[in-house]
Amino acid sequence: MPLSVQDATFVIQLRPAAPLETFVDLLWWSRRAAPYSVSEHMLPTGTCQLVIALHDRPVRWAPADAAADWRTWRHGIVHGPQATYYRAGPKPAGAVIGAAFRPGAAGAVLGVPAAELVDRHVTLEELWGASGRALQERLAACRDPRDALRALERALVSRIRTPLLMHPAVAHALHANSKQPIERLCQETGYSHRHFVALFRTAVGLTPKHYFRLRRFSSAARVLAAGGGSLAGVAAQCGYADQAHFTREFRAFCGAPPSAYRPRSSGSPFHHVAG
Image (cartoon, rainbow, N blue to C red; front, side, top):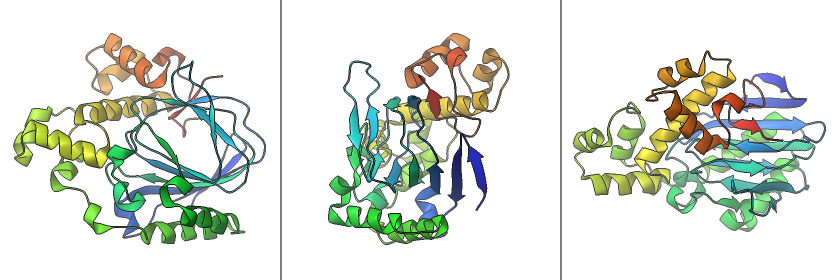
């Protein structure tokens, strides 16, 4: 497990073993020594994220709409697939742990289809009741972060429900070239357009068109965060029709044009520093 320091935050990452690796891309633990005083736009990836605070301080978030009220959560939350960014307020000091789910795979572990979590932020207690709070307390009691990661891995494995395994047509689409027309995917899977979109939406939470737009946007954000070349070059590299198209899409999903994009670090492309 590599250990790195970013913005005075210690981060440990773990790739889960089988059988959880089918559903979860990454487990992580981080500890912030001091409060993080800026607000961020949390950029959409088309996937679900589980975040469990190992402290008792409130964490603030708000929808993208600037007029929307700020809200708070404690202990744990699931961020469902987001159609666009949401706002994260200044973060308190302390440790947090979490899991990044693979596209379309969260439902088998969380116990509800991703379609029911779209644009929602559901607390762990709302999702899993008393057992959700018990998990948070168990993880908070771990003195070694590696013990906490292993405990989280065991807890998620125990929740895998095979009836919610991914439909083969959806799995095929998720591994397809994102530039491939939806009509071609329908032909390859043998389903009508309407049936295919319904299957995909149930598993992933978003329509295929919106999901692949997010996948292209995610690629562009990673390139820019890593110090990629000119905006025109990034637009061409990531499959946008032109730079104007790239700018429109980026603004829609980030809340700022690519020229004003400020990732927290090269390793955090989906955290846009907004204030």
